[in-house]
Image 1: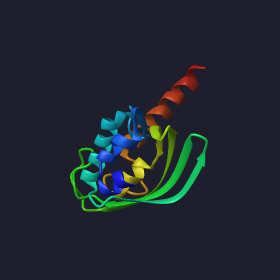
Image 2 (image 1 turned 120 degrees about the vertical axis):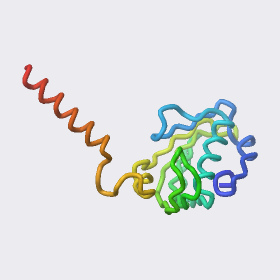
Image 3 (image 1 turned 180 degrees about the horizontal axis):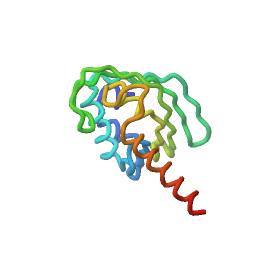
Amino acid sequence: MEILNEGRLEVADEIVAPHFLLHSPTRPEPFEGPDGFKGFVTDLRRGFPDLNIAIDQVIAEGDFVSIRSRVTGTHLGTYRGIPPTGRKIAQSQLHMFHVVDGHINETWQEIDGLGIMQQLGIFPRGEPPRLLMWLVVRLQRIGRRRQRRQ
């Protein structure tokens, strides 16, 4: 909370393991180590300087901790190459942490990246992005061709 809500990046050096990995469905490769995590937070807070994460529920078992949280913020800075829109976002998210000896070794996020892009006005709400529609049509054509060959 200190790192994400307050931007206190130095706390990452205390709690993030040197070989840390952050897996996100919006990225093909994980963020690595404390510096990768700090870069993730810096980018997020640059785009949403009023970022607020409220924890709704915590479940812990063994070395794993799961958190359900509510994320809010206003897009006032460039985020992932997207210029500021001034729009607010709100989303429920799930995170699972693997904690060993007081350090976070690995984190998995479950977030709705498309939902965030829709809230920012990048993709219209209720309509799949054009690329997705193109892909669906293309896959349907490939499927029909295969059926004809059989």
